[in-house]
Image 1 (cartoon, rainbow, N blue to C red):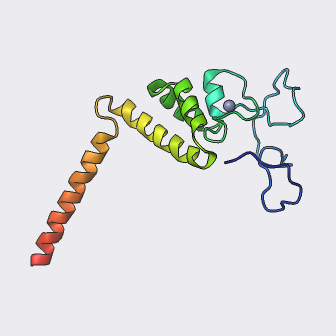
Image 2 (tube, helix red, strand yellow):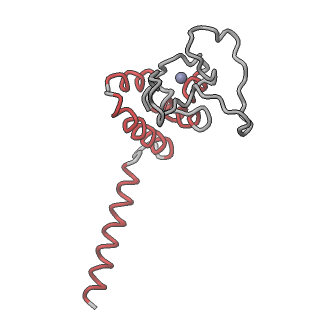
Image 3 (tube, rainbow, N blue to C red):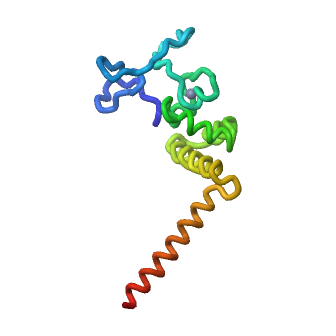
Length: 146
Ligand SMILES: [Zn+2]
């Protein structure tokens, strides 16, 4: 989602990254050396994309809202392999904020489909679903004629 605002009046929307949980589940928060830049105290954990690219995750990282440190790394690996991190970054920057999540979902889906079926990509899934629809229509017609 969008960056959390620094509005102190918002009681419902608490920023996720700036709150510290006390007594929560054990989370691995490795201390990052040299992370003293900026007053906005981020958690220090790189997003899944930056983790994969082995780079420092800066404030306002375009991938951070979409690729979590836990599951986002594997997902971004697929996206990077098929489309390239630079291309995806450029594409996301051209989009308004509210469309980026949908774009990432689409890109991720296509990347995973393209890796499992390099020739057809998600087209093979579409064809299979169309065949299911045809089969269902046929069965429905048979049942209605009985
Ligand atoms: Zn990042």
